[in-house]
Image 1 (cartoon, rainbow, N blue to C red):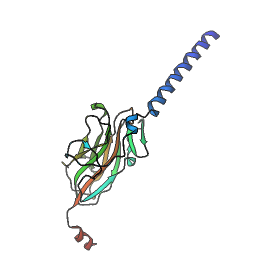
Image 2: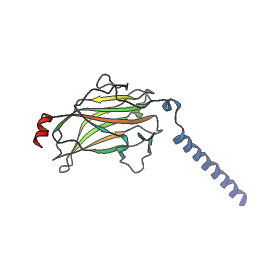
Image 3: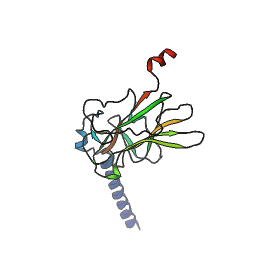
Image 4: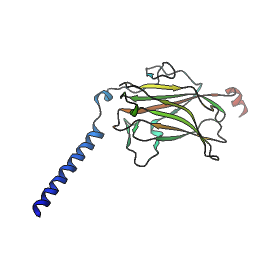
Length: 210
């Protein structure tokens, strides 16, 4: 009996050691290619198509709301996620953050900067802009971008086809939803979100009315 118990304990110890080693490789091994990727910057390119992120900012505006990836929080309790380099978001679930935009402005562009190394549809970065009605509990997807293909460099996507673009803070709330990609992490990450909007009246007039 003692012999069988010792054999069983030895097998359990081997299995535990293997599991710990696998987890350590899964979450601690950062690809060399990713370690060489420079900090992302929103770049220029064809709107609506993924393009490299060069030095010059992407034109837009005239006003902007920049959303840091650290503002997002997971919507599932069993999500495996993390912040790489202090600000790059990765995880295997959906994330969400609320937005506070000026009332009665018109949203004209959703810009998303991301890293997607894999040419795999199951690992795409998916970001969408939403409007919610607290009374009717109805939600409207205003804009959405999904990455495709793979690249070791940061890229950006733009959606200018905004549904119900005029912001109404009296009746609705607004949020962003993001799926940075499935585990293993580090290979697909959300690097930044920018919302471009314009004023429906002249800014000097707005200031004079205050």
